[in-house]
Length: 396
Length: 160
Image (cartoon, rainbow over all chains, first blue to last red; front, side, top):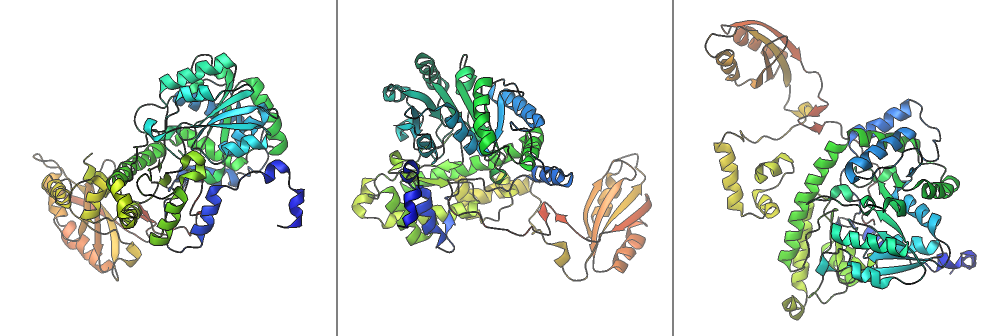
C-alpha cells in the first residue's frame, strides 16, 4: 500500500470497491468476448437529439446556465412529468436539473441526511446506493427483494426493517439489476408508512418509460406524497443519452432549495449542451423511445425464454433491459459462475453480488443487444451449463 | 404485425433457424410464414442493400419524372404498368404534384439511360413528357447511411 493511503478519509477508505469494477478488469483483458454486461442502451442517441446539441454549439451556447437548469428545460420537464407520471411540479422552484440522475441522488441524500441518520433501501440494487448513503456519514439499511416476488418490494419487510433514526426510504422501481416493479397497492402501504413515521421518500424512476406491461406508477403521485418525496429521473435510459449526463430532481421548494445549495457549490450547473439536447428529447423524442422500448421488449421475451429453457430460472422482467436469472442448481456462486463462463465461453454477464449481497445466486444479463449476439451468448451459456456437474445439473 | 415480418423489417440478417430461435418457432414454421407473406403479396422478394458506389461497374441511376394522360378506364394504371414492366425500371410510383409517375431506372451508362428514355419511355402512347435527373451520389440507401461515422472509443464491456 502506498504511504499516501493515510491521507484518505476513513469513511472513503471503508467503502468497498464496486464489484463491477473487479469484473470489468477481467473482461477488459479478454478479446472478442460477447458482453451482456453493459448497463446502458445499445442504441446511439437518436439523431434529432444529437443534432440539437450540435445546433446549440453552432449557436454559441457555451455558457453556464441558471444553477437549477435552463427554464425552458424545466418547463418541458414539468409538463413531461405531469403527462407521464401525473405529478405537477412548478418549473420555477420545484425542479432542479442535475448531471445525471446519479448526481441528483447524491445531492438529494446530502441535502437531507445528518450524520448517523439511516436510509432504508432495497437490494439487489444499483451499485451507488449504499456508498452514496455512507458518504453522507449515514447508515444504509438494506431490505432484500426476492425472485419469489419478481423482485417487487415486500412492504412488511420494509416496515420490519425500520428502526429509530430512519430518515428516508430509497426506492428504485423499475429496478436495475432485476427489472422488478412494485404494484400500486404495495407502494400505497409504503407511502402510508412513510407518512406515519414522517420519512422522506427518494424515488429513482430512471427506467420508468421502459415498463412493458401495464402503466408505471410513481409513489410521488399518491395524495400527500409529493411533499415528502424527492422524485429522481433522467434521460440516460429511455432516450439513450447516458453520455450526456443529464437528469433531474423534483420536490418541494424547500427540498429543491436545499439540493440547490449542494449542487451550486459542487457542480454549478449541468452542461448547457446536454440541457439543450434534453429539451429536444422531451419535445420530440417520444417516437424514438417507443421504437427502442419495442425492440427491448422483443429481446426480453427471447432471452427470458432461453434462460428458462437452459434451466436458469428467470422471471420475465416487466421493465428495464435486464434479465436476472437464478443460478440455483448450478452449484456455483455468482462470481464463480461469471468468471468460469467468461473463461470457458467468452461471454460476460455481471455477478448478482455486484448489486449487493442479496444478489448472490443470480447474474445480470443486459438484453440491449442484437439478436445475433443474444443467440450466440445464450447458446454459449447453454453449453457451459451443460458442462457443470451432472449431480448439480440434475438438481435443477 | 406478423412477428416474422416485424423481425425481418428490423433488418438484422438472421437465418430462418435463428429467426425461429428468436420467435420461439420451428424453422419450418418460419419458412411457412415467409411463404404465406409471399403468397399474400406482402413480401415481394429479397435483395441485399448495396452501397450504390459499389453497385456494379459503370452503373448509372436516374429518376425520371413522367407526365401521362390518364385514360377513361383505369386512369394511370395501364400506362404505369406498361412502363413498370421494363427490366431497367427499378421502381415506379404515381405521385401527386407537378408530374404523374416517378420512375427509377438503372443502366450501365448515361447513353443507355438516354436511349431508354427516348426509345422506350417517351414513345409509349399516352406519355406526354419526361424529365430525367441523374443521381450523382448516394448519402443514404434504404435506411443505411453510406458514410458510417467512425467509432470513437468502444463502450466499456461492463458497466453498472
